[in-house]
Length: 272
Image 1: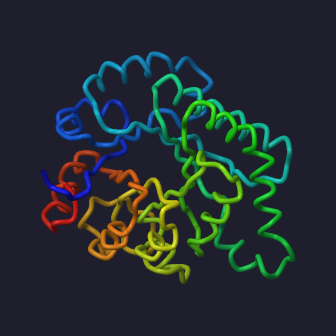
Image 2 (image 1 turned 30 degrees about the horizontal axis):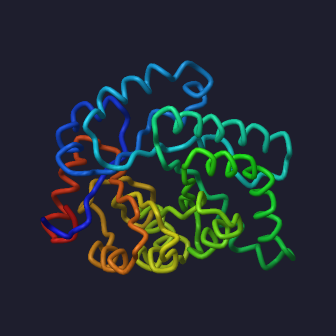
């Protein structure tokens, strides 16, 4: 059997149906995209969980969800906003527990504006991390109790080390780092961030999840792999040095191209 890493994907349950054979042919990791909307989380989501259990009967990969993120930051200094964010993320963890999912993606609080101003305002990084702890303390404790890891995904992050520092600050194995390759490529091309493979190297073994999407360095394209300008050989060379076994999740807009994206990386001899 090939020693190449096995690719997984992010998709809603409606797309799981059309990719089920592919998901079950190997232990492919899956990230469900049905549970980040507030309307879903505030409603009766158990029918979605039951549908997932049926569709994923026989699935041997690791299961996760993309957690809620619309309309908020995990670093708000307003205690009322913190309470709403805390509620949403705890709802996401409830879903994880019901599904048997072991990972939930959350969005980074670091911004381009912040990057250029941290050193202009004394202790601003420390204050931001403190606001994250005020928001997430209960969330992280709950994640530990149910065996879920919260992975913090780069959005506007210019310095790849910021999320590592934030994850480490919790002193918990239930908080780790995620990389979105397209977001990193955007930051590299548009805001002076390092290239994508540097994000992997700097995250090191704190990296437990990666969104694989292609882009042009200008916008958040979520193109099929091979349609943009990311240097995939460099990314996978950096990944090969890790022992943390991050989930390799294809996350693209056109879900009909998920398997084509996997085939592209397989054709380069990088993954299966």
